[in-house]
Image: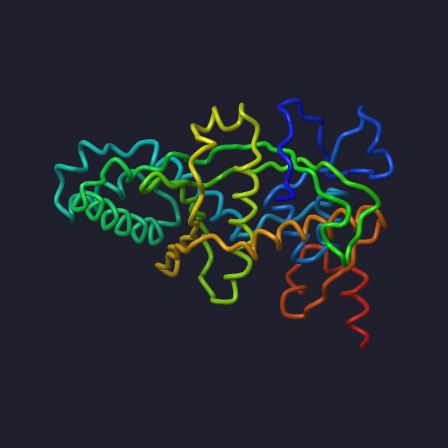
Length: 297
């Protein structure tokens, strides 16, 4: 494995990073989160505007819904009473689950989640595995440092080896048969084309967890010796859940993506990935050279 565990003595980290100053131990290293990595994968130019230059974006309804539902999901597991749930009928359990959600504009999604969780709880009860129902990680922040070898990606050979700082909040992680299963929540609609993207997100989590500092793992209650063998994602809007064995190809894709990100910083060149159906909804459409040029084609 080319990922190298670092010590708990972490350097400062930033998005506004200068590779030419890397050897100065007083200078911060590159910060990479799951969100920033995903944005770079989507469009390096949008990443530059958003994370490096910190240009403002309008808060959309999708962002508002995502925040509300993620918060309610975290609170649900913090407040869920297993002993009480064991005494309830199915309909009572659905109502109990629904009562643990807030009263806002997303009640239809909460109903779907409440039914899903009632089914999952009763299944765990029937299998005599109630102790595995609650997640062992519920919105936990982790920090890690990894070293990227300069020649890891032949297409984007770097000027040197670099250490980067990974940071992320793991939505949920469950334990089953002494194996960890991280599970990501998404509030949009499920489409099959999202599979590759989701696998990269879960691979990012796996790299983050495997290389997290001892302090981060201890705070999250994660045992470094328990393996992550599966991962999955849950889209309640589509009543869709998928769990699969980890994919090594997705793991390598994330490492290659990090190489490409560092390569862009080295050259100070963040190219735009223009696609008319999606770019017209981007907050930076009016200032993006690629988008503006396309209007004249």
